[in-house]
Image (cartoon, rainbow, N blue to C red; front, side, top):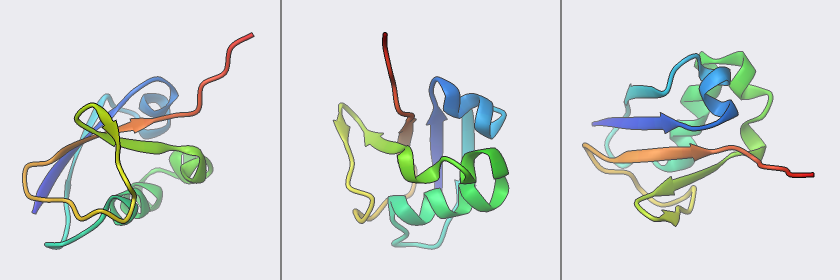
Length: 81
């Protein structure tokens, strides 16, 4: 299956793009997609545990299955001062 990952904020720098297309095995989860990104992008790998994923308007469970054509977003940690 093929999914698209939209990278927002600092995650675009870590992955070198605003959007990434990944080919994953059928039934792959959000966590497995993040594992693939961590293998491809060392800057992302160092921060992987602090990134949430969203699907539509909601934060998605990393254990939820993904489906062909899904678009998920990386939500990096945010701080303000």
